[in-house]
Length: 228
Length: 228
Image (spheres, rainbow over the protein chains, first blue to last red):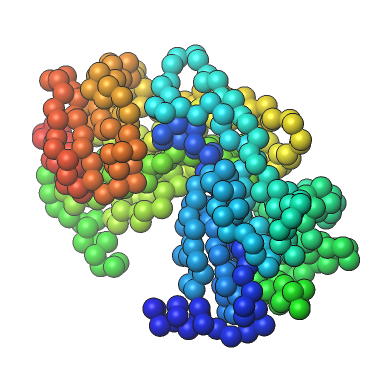
């Protein structure tokens, strides 16, 4: 396994010499020491993208929330838990040639998170105040200087996938959005397949449903072509 | 593995002929199709208890929330996600000779859970209303008829463990409380060891820190003794 990791790390390919950031997995936002807000991202697609980029020679930094899937071999892995920690980790990784934000980052954190376990009291519902998390994709996309030449965001939608993703791309200021439909009936979130739409300056391109590894491979080839 | 499971299922011991319910793991309470509220229970202690009871000959029904640990061989496993589903499953399992409620059940659910993904809107924090979940331990402990002869609750505390557990036992109406300190610095939640205090009519008995398997074994022996 060590030899395989070294071979992967030394792979020569179209992305040799390129430093690429990939974020992946969910974030967990603590409510108190035992409770937290999570999301159903497995980290499978982000991990597959890190593997595909590494296999094409890229120097990949993989910033991941608490995901169950095995970490990609040959990538430099940074583990975080919350959105705020993820932004810090991302900023420490820059500059990069390309950044792929595949993590499902919590939009909100609990502003009133408690240091001790919140006790249940009859009839009393705990007050929970939320604060907006930093928008990592927008922050990096809109950097005045040092913005990565290629910034790729993800959109997990349940309705109006293309409209929402197109609007998201313009709002965030990223170059591409990889949009997918995470409605429970698709089985995509937590599953092994994905059906994505790549939204760029050129419009929306629908990719047929395929394995997450294959989506990762095709996206890595696009990234290599874009970086020249 | 199948042979081993059958052997376990057919184990003869002091609990042969006894039907015992064990709940385990966290519950997940949905916010929308992709987000949920979770807790850090790994399900390790509940699973170890189910194994120990099965090894002593009991017919174990294991009702578990979404936990990562392997399910106990030889037990009848029922998978649930939310507290409401867990109560339904528990009620369907009764009557039993003993019930061990080791699950970390969410006290609250999101009353305003959405069928589609909640969109982030600049400056707008989503309104989230909470409703109290059914109290499974209290419901079963206070059954007017058909109450299991032995009801064991768990208390995950971060402060004043014995005082809180003693009060919880009286408030819920269960026979025993297995209390543990889940402060992050103990490493118990998600770890392989536990340091518990068994609170009963006889008072509070502190057990030294030991492996979760050993806690399970000692608790199973106590249950066998109590059931005679």
